[in-house]
Length: 151
Ligand code: 4NP
Image (cartoon, rainbow, N blue to C red; front, side, top):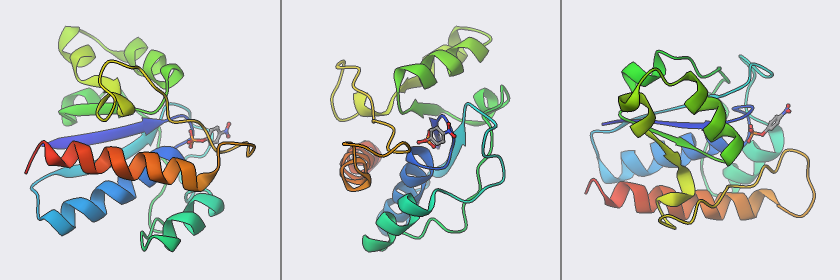
């Protein structure tokens, strides 16, 4: 099983999901490959946002080796499931889908823990109310729920 998590910049939400999923996959010894990407190229090759890294570190998750990359159409060939953080990411990824099989791989990440509710993981990048810890909790719970499907 190969799972890709996607957001806009690949520096806040999706690298956090990648780091949490990698941590849980290792802990649970599951045969699952995890990667992340952004729909934009704004931060290509950059490390995750320092605020996201610092918050993850509080939970013993090390995001510092990760580097941003842009989602590419070939990701549809490599990955079995593609989870996006918000509806804008969903539109951007679906625009690149070549056929029904590509489209069927894509879903909102929070539909794992909140089926059919089409909820979004809010973007913490611009600060404000959202908060990095709040996003961490959402991503942790949903990552755990996702991997329970493969245990
Ligand atoms: P992310 O957050 O999509 O969770 O990585 C963002 C990071 C950077 C930008 C937007 C969202 N940006 O516009 O630079």
